[in-house]
Image 1 (cartoon, rainbow, N blue to C red):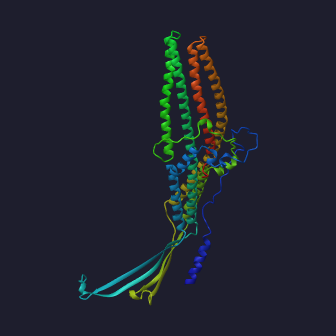
Image 2: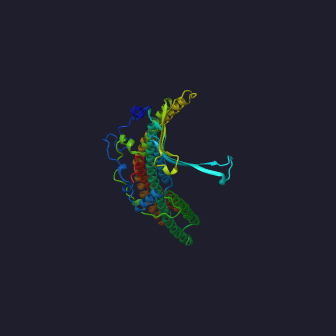
Image 3: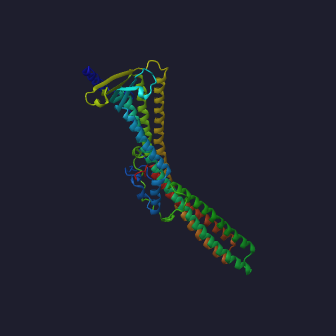
Length: 471
């Protein structure tokens, strides 16, 4: 009898190599030969990419590096992503354990008493204890023979979900690094705007003082005084508005780094930040392997593909083994000496006969889920190509805008100087000088914004290429 069961178990074990359901095959994606937006589309793409650099090699500001490190420790989104990875690890362990037998140890002691007078409810003094039973058993409970691969497919799906959660964590890191850098550059641009506003206010207050003296001596009119006051007040109102934006930006940075609202330490000024000498995007085909969000989408697709096998396995019979092995004795003192060895073994087979289409619907549901994840995977790839192209275009065009605005500021600075010289010399009116001053102030603010946009274009390109998660 024992030999026959061993043969049966060996034959069933050989059958466990079978797994129903489709094996995963990566979907074919047509990558473009080169990214749209590169400076020279006809040139051979450089396999090197900006994304290969660590974030602390891209962003040289020490204060910015401290903020990023703080965010990588305390940011709420990243902490949640880490918890999801741990959750997926635990789920993978739970699912994988179903492939192995579950063994429990149990012990039991039973005392039997017989009443002397035959009453059902007897007093303690009327009861005679004459039997004490004991047993120690190892229970083998519901070990399923994975003949059709249902459990292995479920483990495959759980493992893919674990990998997807890990890639999702990396994607959160990429987004977090870029968000902190972008927020910091926005803050430094606001600081620069505040410096421009204060410097302009000081210059206009000095002009107002001179014009007021000229009016007192009868050289200027009260209209010119009012026009100069207008410029002073317009520069004055910019300062509190900019200070408000600065403090709110500091609060946003504090939130990204997991801290209560507080002042943010500054490092390099907006104009002192050095851009990378070149920003090679790399090969488009490598982007699929580099970006964590694409890899996460693919692992979700792998999991959905394995779920089809889990659903299809329900069509086939399920075989489970149950049994126990141990010792039993009528005397507790002889439990391990002179006791009886007991064992039991019982295979069980269940086969669905009528489920009202439930199994068929579950298979259709699993296939539909796989198609949905396939669409999400393809969308993630196309979105990545678009983001890289947009970032390359922005990087090239923003530099051109910044160069033209720098020339405009130089021209307006000279114009303002000449206009005030003509006014002081009595050749032109104050209105011409005030217009030149107003245009110069606006141009300086736009130049500061274009410098910030140039830095942000590098941040967005770095993120689009999948850089920053290599901590």
